[in-house]
Image 1 (cartoon, rainbow, N blue to C red):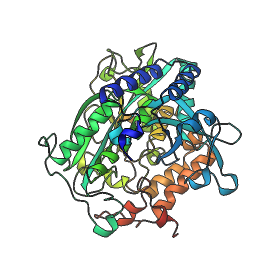
Image 2: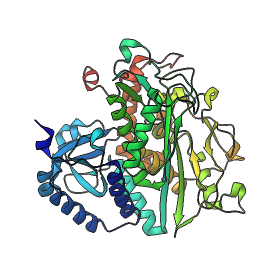
Image 3: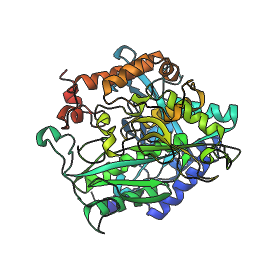
Image 4: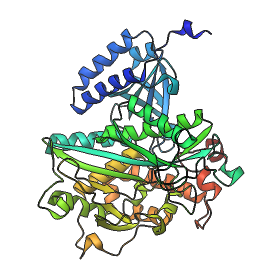
Length: 476
């Protein structure tokens, strides 16, 4: 069919950026959900060039799911969208499978037509149970409620920015085909900050950055990372739920751009041994009344007592929360001290091997950086875990807690044991969701060799939750 006959929405990157920044500002300013809902429904009704709305939600492991709803259907049925939860790993059993999607109208994105197709917009949602209550295994909803509670109770705005590293490999579906090839092929063998204009890695980074800008990310810098064919694209801080949504969109953009180039964007924490792995350094701060309460010009490292207590709680529960922050078998290859790995349960302003780093900052930028996070972890679970632990966890009565000689697990089995045994993780997630998550991680681990060894094994890629081959899982 001729494109002229379709007349679907296709906006310039400048128009997209204006729309997405407007929506982002509304979200930041906590405009009433009812007002935003009315605006979005009117926009969808009036904009005849939109054919479908892509509704996004994330499962317990952080895998992003997308459903396209016909626009006219969604306008009439947005408050009663059901789906089969038993088909989603970690969600309901078959006997209680009906779940519903609740639209988060503030999390509305306009995407470039050349990347996502014309005539579509993107909208995040939460999962609710059939009785209308929040669904406990939907961690996005849990995070949203926690952030809302902190604002209402303490006046706190929870802020986050994540530095997400990835690899660019030759060929499409390189992860799914890993069992056939046994290796990944770099598209670039340059180095840190080095990539010539127009080479595949630079073209990929440039394209992803352009799409991010158009989608309101407010980019800061982008560059090749330390390992060959590795990339990182940094963008501005956001409130905690928006920050987690942006992680999901960041990875979606990277995968889509790579696929269009005949390549694969991989967020496996350690897809290649012998070089630096992929991290997702998680920078967090808290503001109250517009003031950064982590900053104190007279404090140690110019950090406030509140910030240091936040850090001490993270360190106290370091082993308890290692699994939510490093949620795959492959993630434990990355926690290797030879490659700037943040596997030491301590805090430092300089040592990049520390689980927590205190970057140089001022009143605006003072923050806590949790470095021991893999880019494949559920972003909503990561940010919920970090903030709730930092604000509500315990502080151990351990001498020299911030520099104690303690280390994170070097394998997922130990991490699972720590997670199951900790009373704190029950308080974090509740016994039911905690058990489901641990069981999912155990199932992946049991399909992989127990000893990591020095070679990446096919099962740790094949049964990785972000790759997820349903056909293979169904053989068990």
